[in-house]
Image 1 (cartoon, rainbow, N blue to C red):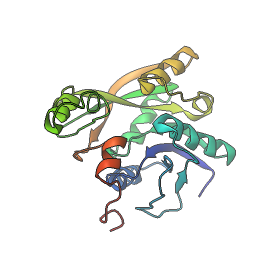
Image 2: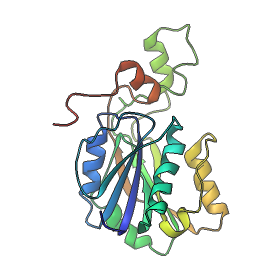
Image 3: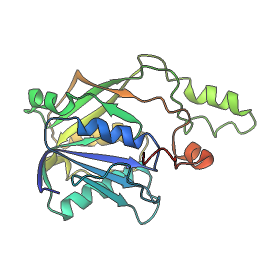
Image 4: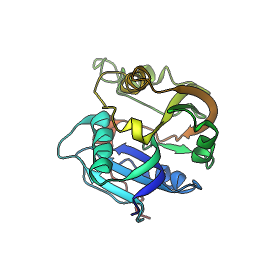
Length: 223
């Protein structure tokens, strides 16, 4: 592991099989990068071994926001330096031009990227799935996935590392928007580009509850 990079990627995970493809998409970036994978109080699985991938485990369950903060704190304590910090979910893949495109917006402190869901099969049961226990599973899945439509625009973002490391993650819902709001209120200049996109992978049931129910470890993960 080096000590200075163009980009640090923080991935919070519970060990979903899609983690491997998320990591592989980062490895296609042209600029030097460090990948910090934080398992939220789960057994550490290393789908890809590389000197610039760090696998960590939180001492207790802290949810996604806490796991992200755990990764940032590790980088700070190990004196890792970078130009940008990016957050990526473990079921997403980014385009090869992701970090290269950041150069176009290097004058900004926070860059909000665009994303598209190209397949309507992604299921996120945390919202709605457990709200209606009296309904059958198929109906609960339908309610949970109702907001997810083809070409639905979401977001991911990158921040200047020297400023981002001073912003703390909290568990306020929705955490991503809260974090971006905190970043902007702190005086960071920002822009929503729409020029950098990343693709949601279709993985069937996703999210912490579903994966704990159906099994989070996959025998194909290390192949």
